[in-house]
Image: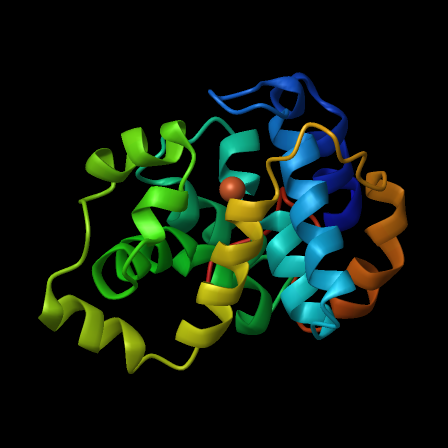
Length: 184
Ligand code: FE
């Protein structure tokens, strides 16, 4: 099974039909986020990161761990331009809560609820350290599409629409099969 097959299977599976407290299913939410990134003209790795940011949820990870675990799983096939914004999208929420007036007020009720489980808003020191990281800007971009991608009136493209974009991003040096994949 290729990485694309493994990801397609998750998007087609029962986990993708869960609502997780939002107005859209997690699969719809992720496809909406990918479509928003694409519409914004984001580079392909960032479109992939937006599409895949909650892949940890499709693999039944907790609210607190889903960024890290999702990025680790994706690193079998994709480089840091895809995996780092995924890993950091929860931190980006904590960062924006600390640094952007009014941001918390625009979060969905479920996202406010999980904020506490995720460590709450960053301290000033944590925010400065986050900002200094090479993928902070990309993680914040993913986070904004994440927040926007919860509209029940929007019908997002199917997963197949993103397959060629994802295929072009597969790292040739990395193992393609989840069975033999090790994390980097
Ligand atoms: Fe999300």
